[in-house]
Length: 492
Figure 1 (spheres, rainbow, N blue to C red):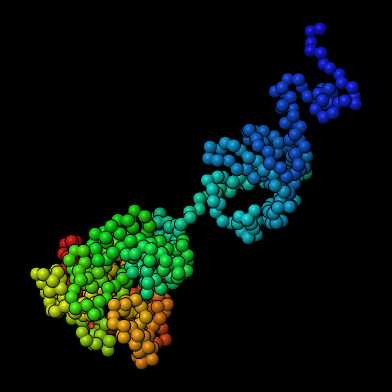
Figure 2 (figure 1 turned 90 degrees about the horizontal axis):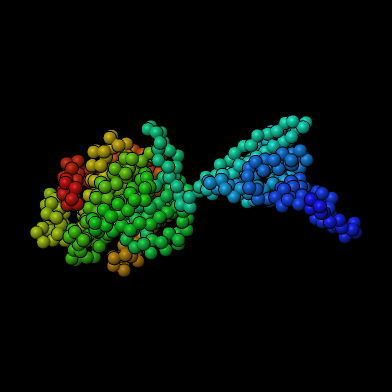
């Protein structure tokens, strides 16, 4: 009576596990019984299954058993595990039923991968990066003539960012192929918005829309149909030098490269009889259009220098009204900086005049004077930094955009008659979309890389180098404007 007595059941009552136990196919020892049950289970695995394994060794033994039984022909094993390589999940898929024949293993033992880049698996393109922190191991094995096996090949997944990515140069002298980053001031309407849309639609640029009103800019971008991944909005008030410095700090915190800067925003108060002032006390038109952009350009110059983009550019939008060698530039009041006495006095209207030349305030003239300063600043940037940095410094006049919001503070009769006058009389009318294309050309066109140029377009929309007026091209006056501007913005 030393051993445990095994009960014998009548043959007709033995079914399933009881029959296997009675026949001795299942050991009474629970641990050995479990191991035998798993061996039997693995041998009978169907061709498409999902089984959780504890160790890779067990998986390899199971896979070898499948190979011996011939159930892995024309198939592969896809393994996924985390960085800690835990919770291994093994899924066996049949290529014949789930994938095109391009992924099947043929008798020669070589996968036909020529069409792999055009193949998708479960809705995921195999040629793209896989969005996960997991490692995908693609194992292909083929038993040929009872001996031959293929070793595993590995496809490693990489993270996909939800926002446009950028890569800095890793070695000196090499250019990185990536999406360019451009800052456009005043991109919530008019020329700035049209240029932002044009650049974003190419898919080659990420546009930073630098504007005062975040919500207005967001609505404008959505209304223009700009894809969310191709733009971002950052607050910038050019009428406050503190806001300019804060913008530069925020931009650098974003760790984006800077490949192009477009100084486009402008204030135009043609009917103002009394001056308005910036946060620092400068006359509003010159303080915003010139001094705000001057500080922004000087602070971001270092960021442009660091860019590895093939063509780095700083663009300041000019105006025909500041060019007195044209018909439009001779419409009173004409731009005239004089001896810069008002500018040197701080344009505060207290100790000195609010006008650059020291004269009586005129809102339309203040705008034109600021545009002369813009074009002088561009040329001084070119003389000081082009050879050293390779940055292209340019200005442009994209044409008369008679319907732009720049004229919103003009008298209603002017806003009514000016567009048809430009369309049918002067023939100088340019739509916002066309002007946006022209500005985007100056940002990205390889044929417009010459520095120190003031670009214009003829009636056939062909670009050409325009001539600046004597005052707008005066090198000595450009140097003086530069030096006074440095003192006013606190860089001297």
